[in-house]
Length: 315
Image (cartoon, rainbow, N blue to C red; front, side):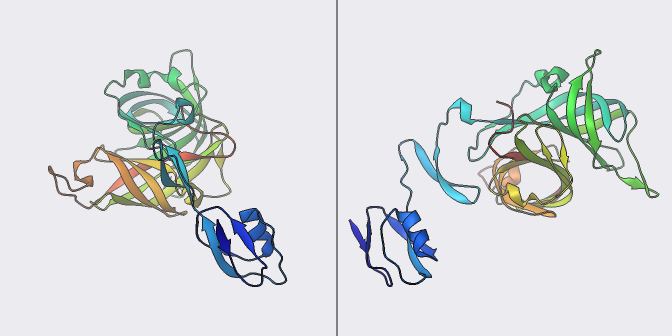
């Protein structure tokens, strides 16, 4: 038993293991340590903080969001939420400010899980992901890349039409302007990236910008356009600050055709940075086969859902 002695308290005891934390009032002390104590003045002192003891045979103690947690090495399937991040060719039939009728021929994909887990799949068979019924009723974001280097980003909910094509009903949030007027794609074949969010209680983020890869596993994204949207495909126009997603997982797809999956360490409305834990690029790290190289590319990004009583992604 560890005896805590500090003025102006009489005395307090606890059996926990401690590090350091600042407590401002006697009430905070009682709530934190579940002890009885008498106080006659504010504390404003640095007090011990309890360590969390994990089951080291099954768990790791890692950062999740803004706090440390015990996380299972092999979580149950019910705890894993998978996010689809696909690249391919989009055949657009017609498009407007609120609708996109299209189908996608997927040529590559990466699926990653929600934080704090870091499981990744890169399937070699992706034909199933070209079937638009896969996205029926789901919230998706589609980034269309035109030959002149512009990106048109659509966010909404997909419904499958009688001819098998999908109609994304929502809004175009990345249209570029020409002569002061918004321009939209009309029809044609486009290089594209599709991201999917399933659960309606989650808030995710999508966007595009310029990715700076350090060559030692770190990356920074200079955000051009970003939007936060719900699992119902509804865009939140009240903010573009990505700070709420710090500590969560995200993925990028760049012009070279590579994927990077990383954990966000810092984010705001104009920048996002993190540490890569999965990459299809040989030069992301220095290995026996290649030397890590720094470079810059245009990229699209998709962020793990920040959940409020629910989850995002595809189970």
